[in-house]
Length: 263
Image 1 (cartoon, rainbow, N blue to C red):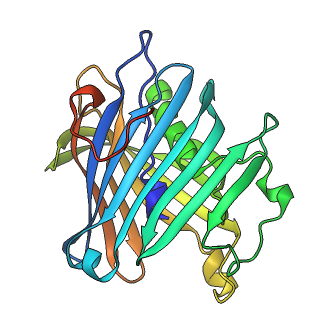
Image 2 (image 1 turned 30 degrees about the vertical axis):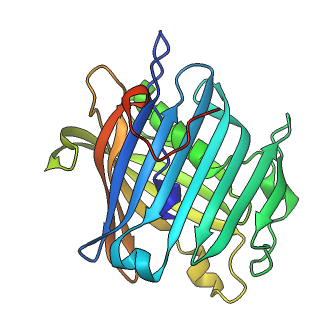
Image 3 (image 1 turned 90 degrees about the horizontal axis):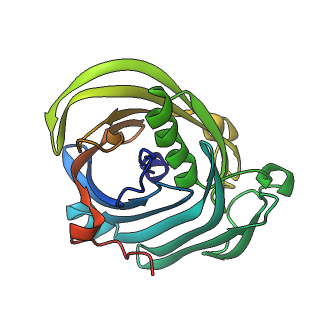
């Protein structure tokens, strides 16, 4: 669920702000295992979040992966109303595709999925109703932080394969030492994700139900702009704590970006 915990959003302002490009390095076991770049355009009545993740270094040699994920929709206050969710990429040389649209009533409609979803338990339609995609859910989190100064929120999430509940609580303020592209005052949020349906057929049910937690720190790396996730710490069973660290952030118009801009 790490990529799910790396979804981003920006502070809404009176005048529409230019989209941003934020870059993160993801570290595990002392290595930089992934690079993530996010295009963030969620000021105003509509939003677009598009991320590109690339496996890095020796990990990338043994487990090649390159994936672009995007979410588009509109805002109803701090609630996202998703319209379109797309995943396109490769993992270990095999294509990874999800194409999902949403009806006006908020029902996701799966247009395409590759590889076929044959190794997981099906997610009943009743559990899909009223859900949002992962990037929209985490965009909501940052919008809540920007408007309230706290991170108490939640979302019902469906990504085409899995159905999960997200809950986030405020853990307090702190000061982060300089690392990557940020150091300074930050708000700590505690994230918990629980799988509701869609576990792998060979996965132990008790293990699948175990909540996954993460600490997400929000800071203000650009003066005059809203808060962004600047660090994420995710404990794992096999690799210890996986850490995502903000490396840089800049206006999209001046950025040399890996992420394809909106056409």
